[in-house]
Length: 280
Image (cartoon, rainbow, N blue to C red; front, side, top):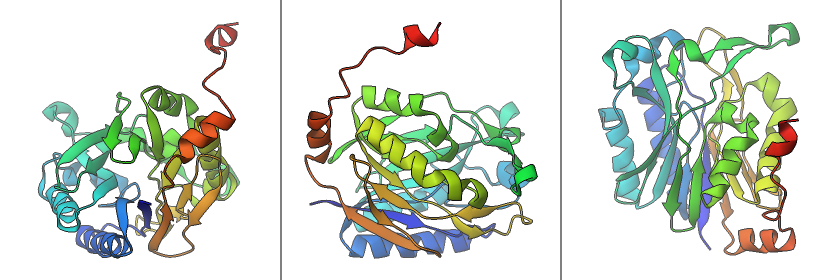
């Protein structure tokens, strides 16, 4: 059975350190037999938000080519959960970049790119959390992305997207059986919502969910402390793998036929269209 892996990182503003750690953990996952490895949001850099624009690269930039070469070296599918992609419009690129997830095949070819749609603009200070305005330096994506893999179609999303179930319904309508949710959930929101939301997306869509996560405090002036708990959830909603504290990996077998089995038992494809009810 194919083995999938989630990588858990403690990202920083040291780009080279982030890349070396990513390479080490991806190699560890591949050595354990993983054929699809996923890394979290902000894989390449997690530091002061205002520096994002100056660090942005096109998808064929040197940092991203290095990750493509890693996929080719190991002969795996590699989902890089979050990089800083330069905006193609120079006027916009001076102020904003995309938060982008990249999927490479075992030859290092880029097979899919997803730009984060739902941006993290929240104020949790009254409950001991943070205030964050991702949209100030991040351009919004506008495309639902589902990519072919040998183990099923993979729907791509990033972190705050997790709270918007319509995105995943759209992916399933396009044939998705695996949902990737690379994230950097805050410690405050993670402890209350992370497991519940991921299991809900797995259950309601009857899909595998791969959720690699950032963990721990980051060197971004104390703004972020990430929850961690990278998860792999099966289509029944059962957590089949989870990372503990610290950087590391978790692995699970992607059981062939499991999606079809769950969908046969509970045929959720037969339902009323909710839109007329929502319109009042």
